[in-house]
Amino acid sequence: MTSWLPDIKEGKSPLYIRVADQIEDAIMAGDLQAGAKLPPQRNLAYDIGVTIGTISRAYSLLHERGLVSGEVGRGTYVRSRPEIASQDANDPATVSFAGTRPFHPPPGKIRFDSTAAPDVGQNQIIASVINEIMRDHPREIASYTRSFPDHWSEAGARWLSYSKWTPAIDSVVPTLGAHAGVMAIISSLTSPGDRIVFEHMTYSQISRAAGLIGRRSSLVDSDDFGVLPEDFERVCLQQHPKIAFFMSSAQNPTLATLPLDRRREIADIAHRHNVWLIEDNLYGAMNKKDIPLIAELAPDRTFVIDGLSKSVAAGVRGGWVACPPHFAQRVRIAHKMITGGLPFMLAELCSRLVLSGEAERIWERCREEINAREALAKEILAGYDFNSNPDIPFLWLKLPEPWLSATFKNAVLADGVLIDDEDEFRAGRSGKITHRVRIGFSSPHTREDVSNGLKVVRRLLENGSAGYDSLA
Image (cartoon, rainbow, N blue to C red; front, side, top):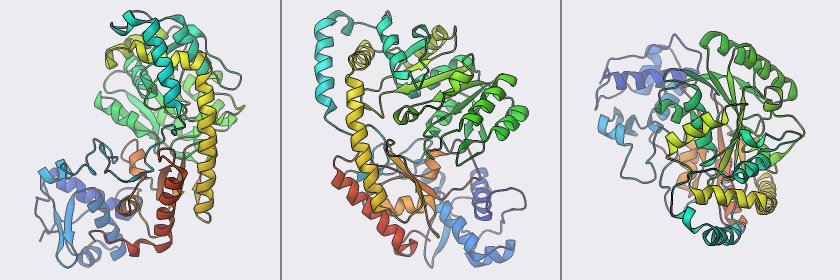
């Protein structure tokens, strides 16, 4: 048994997270070797002066991170490096890359881990438009995209329009979805080592992708109304970021919407500290309000992102970026370099869907379905604390004691439902703990599936963690 002890004097995160982080660091540094037995929970609690409950939660967190294994009565042991690296790589339920969501989810599960547009029969409309493109442009289909017709950007300008704001057509760049658009901006405006600001909880795939190309994350605090401008200024003063990535409306996963006064403050701070802004309006555009975009307040340094994946069809994977003046060509070139180029079929399909009005009609049908499913969620989960919006295909659920986010995710999975725990949305290593999970209800095929999945969630919330047996 190891005599190593964690040092938890420093840090602001909860004690159990400090203990878990210290043990993880020791494992990765080799101070705790594979096969080493961790101290019994009661002994470690006594040695470092905390409660046994703190150590129990820390050990549970280490189990969830895949760093240790053990059984009741036998003890807790450090897993070998190959085990840690693979994270049960042969099990499709656990294969992931720099995140918690599986690449290949287990079959037969109700999927609440996606927010793609619901199936409302849009495949028939899309198939018809594709046939028209094949008929009208046979040569373009057989070749690489060499030019960008104006109507591709015109469609983007129309789809990106929000409230009283409409971007100039020559500022719009068609992209392979919103994610590719964001990465094109980051690639064109930053260099390896530069810092990008993210909220603690956000669409973390951007921060992870940025990390892969050598950019560093800086985290800014938020509350129920979104980013705290005073903390954004603190980060700008101390860490000198190049870009900030924000979702100003219907933020993923919290659903927070920035009030107008905060938008003005953020625009002012960005100007004073020469920080570029990426305003992801993918969900915000689904919940149209009269509140101005940050881009209206700081048009010279704000890039606006939107696409069709949440409101029309995720499989189409089309999107657009509206750039500040004179940056469209720079972003277009960066997008080509990091993606290999924009397929003619995709860009033409997206533009025809938007310009014909079919995209808007599909979205109206999706909105009706999302409204009905959100109402169903409110009914089934009544009495529990969660954020939701009738037009947005997910909710942000607060877990009652003693549930931990990852433990609840595993418990729900054992009962046949996939959800996202809070770790899926961490933009970096953060001590901010919310004890929440995101439940996306747009992917199940029927409302009956949605109802059945939500009832599984409620049953576990009511029964508590005593009804779930993990490797404690």
